[in-house]
Image 1: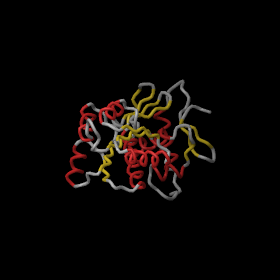
Image 2 (image 1 turned 120 degrees about the vertical axis):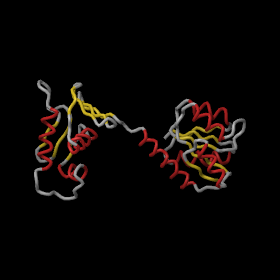
Image 3 (image 1 turned 180 degrees about the vertical axis):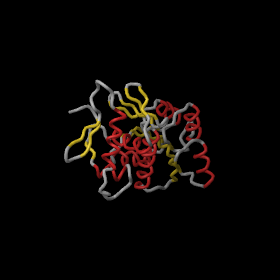
Image 4 (image 1 turned 120 degrees about the horizontal axis):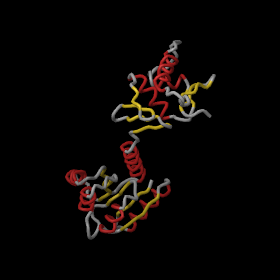
Length: 225
């Protein structure tokens, strides 16, 4: 991840930057508030690690300005101010996490990774596409070439899984575990029956079939290979 470190203590900045870099992150460090604000406002970073007591523009004011400017980059406050009221102030200012000094590097790394996962989840795709097939996860709607397709809930779940794995073969076992939440094969044709109905609903005259059966392996969503 790309991390902006806003820290005026040179020793702490070097320690944190070295630790993050050694764990695969790209780190840029600045030592005062205004420069930190400008860098953060550029949107070039995945995570901000902010000391509250940086000169010219303190950490709380900096984060408040970022949030007022609709910059939603996750913020981890890393600061010597560790009382309960300090933590509350940091979170109320728009921080996402708060780690007092002194700190252990493994905990800092774990918190940074957690913020990164949270950010990736919040920006996850809400529209899935394969060719002229489109699924809107928020509206719970499906269309092909602009034509709406009505699906039953299980068919929707089945198609969503196929779309998330478009171009790859998915096995019957994978579908049973993910769509039906079964850890065993019930020896029925439930997958085959749902797949047949789904194929029928997705069919469009003069267009290639989107779902291919791979004999002895499973199914693949996408144009024929």
